Image (cartoon, rainbow, N blue to C red; front, side):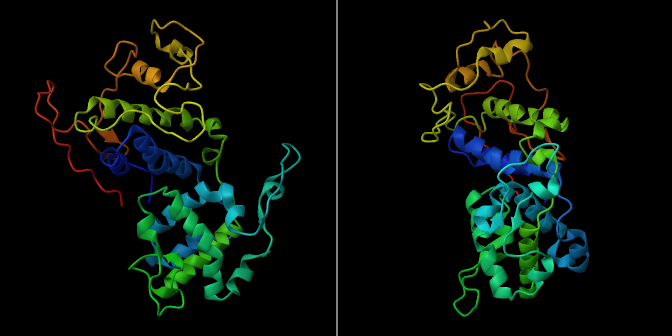
Length: 321
C-alpha cells in the first residue's frame, strides 16, 4: 500500500460535507497511515517476507495494508482475542517480553497450524469487523469482504478478499493474520504515544497545515460547510463557538505576530480566524499546493489569479486504491 499520498489527500478534498468530515477523513486515511508506515513492524511471530516469497499472489500491497492495520488496531487486541495484558510496565525493570500482551489460548504459532480452517476464520471475525467499522482506509473494500453465499460453509463470515486469490490463498492469509495478531512483535515510536521522540514527527505534520490552507484558498473546494461541528464527543473544542479549545494565543507567539499573548482559551471560530492563510495574523503561506509526496494533486486547478463571479467546477477527485 505504501505511504498515504495525493490520492488519499484528493479523496478527502472531494468527499467531505463538513469541516469535521474532512478532518476525520484526513485523520484516518492520511495521518494514521503516515504514522504506522514510519513506525515499521518487526520481530513478529511469523516471517511475512518468507510468506510473500512463498505466496506472491498475495502481493506486497495487500500485506502492507494489513501491516498498517495491525499497528493501528494493536491497542485493542484484547477486545478481539483472548489475551493476557500486563496492567503496567516499569521502565528499567520490564522489557519487551514482560510488557507484551500474550495469547491466553495459544503458546506457539505451530498450534495455529493445527486448527481447522473454519475455526481460524471464527477467531478472526471480531477483528475483521472492527477494521471495517473503524474505516481507516479507502482500501478496506479491496482486501476484506463478507461471504454472501448460502451454499458456502463460510456464509456470513468475513474473509480476506481478492479476485487474484484462490480460496486456499485466502484461508492461508487468514491464518497468517491470526498468527500475527496473537504473536504480535513490535513497532517503532511513530506508532505510539511516544511519536514525538522520532525527529521525523516534527517535519511531517506541516502537511496538515498545508492541507488546511489549500482547502481554504481553493474555490474548487472551499464552498462546502467549513464550520466545525463535532457535537457529542464530550471533548474540549466541541462546536464552532460556545466551548473552548485547549489553546491560547500563546501558540502563535513564535510566529512574529503582534497578537496579544493572552491566556484566554480560544474557540474553534477564533482559531480558524487566526489561521486564515490570506489574513493578517499568520505571517506565512505555503509556496505551492501541488506536491503531496511522490505524486501531484492541485486543489487550485483551473483557478485564475482573480476569481470571477462564475463558479469554478471542482475537478473529479482521484480514487485511492
